[in-house]
Each structure stands twice: as C-alpha cells, then as structure tokens.
Image 1: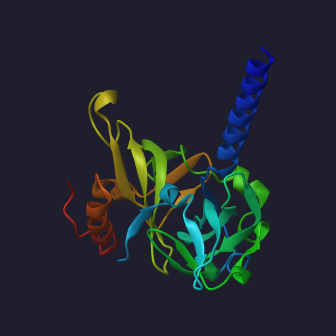
Image 2: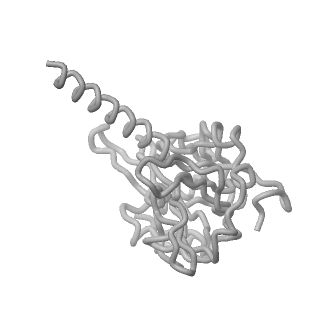
Length: 42
Length: 194
C-alpha cells in the first residue's frame, strides 16, 4: 500500500514539475517601441 | 525575399554559434512595432528542466535566422535580458490574441502569429490572423485563418494592432502565396485583389 502512495506522489511531482517547466519555456511574441538610437537598435 | 517564418515557430529553435555549439534556445520573439523589425529573442536553456535564461539575444548579434537554427558568432554575443526587452514591456506588449483593426476602424480579426523574414533582415512582413466578419463573409464556422501584410502605418500594443485598410485586400491563405502578396502590396499595390 505504501509503495502505491509513494509512486503516486512521485508521479504527481513529476507531472507538476514538467508542466511548470513547459510553461516557463513556452514563448510568445512581444512588441516594443524603440527610440532611434536607443537600446536594442542595430 | 528570404524565407518567411511564423514567429511562434521560432520558439524552441536552437541558438547555435558558428563554432557549432548550441548555447540556448529561443523563448520569446521581440520586435520593434514602429520599425517592423525583430530586435531580439529571449532565451531558455537547452536542458529538459532548464528554465528561462537571464541572457537574451539582441538582433544585432544574430548572424543569420534560419529555418532550423538561429546562428550567432559566439556566446559572447548574448546580452542581459533588459537590453532586449524590459519586464514591463514583456508584460504589456504581447501581441498574440490582440484585436486587428484597420485604420478605417473595422475589426478584421485577432492576431495568431507574426510573420518574419529569415536571413539577416529580421523584417516583420505581416501577421497571421483569425479572420473576422469584416474580412471574411459567412458564418463563424466558415471564417478562417489568413495572412495580412504589415503595412507601414503599423500601430500595435497588447490590445490592438492597426493595419492599413488596403492591406486587407492582399490577404493570403498560406505563406508561399503570402510572399507574393507582400511583394505586390509594397510595390504600389499593383497586385490583383482576390
């Protein structure tokens, strides 16, 4: 019985960890406005 | 024109030095709304459990943006993230799902993706949008996803994107045909509207 509980707990922690990491790594597109000669200008 | 790519497809693209070392992967694509150019990328680590990096990649350090990798000269080209995008900008400037309005005030859809030119230019040439009633007639079920040119009078924020009304006459259903539409749009609107 205790083995089932441990395995279930480990599985839950793994799923949560992977979900959090997937969220942190997922990307988006960001629009900014740069002043001429300001940072980020090439 | 170089190959066109959807900005969302750049996420997870490896950042590789000319020496062949993969130093990071792309997380967010940052572009200058006024200039219509990519200004850089935020990065995340390459490992399975690695999160966002504190370093980002300014466009000035990009050797070439390819279909399978972003090439840089060496890892020293990476810069602190605020150089590419400040935290406040990152929170307020998200364009995905923003409404698309024409400069005549018609809402034509919502932003699904941003189309950028690969190679060394980093130009933003258009947007992939979920077309609304003003752009595609018919029931909601029959409305579809199209590409529209960026236009030169672009205004964009996290809430709305403004494009010239005549840009909506140059929509395309896929990227290959969109490249031709963009060319026609920028060459004095000489293309034939669909």
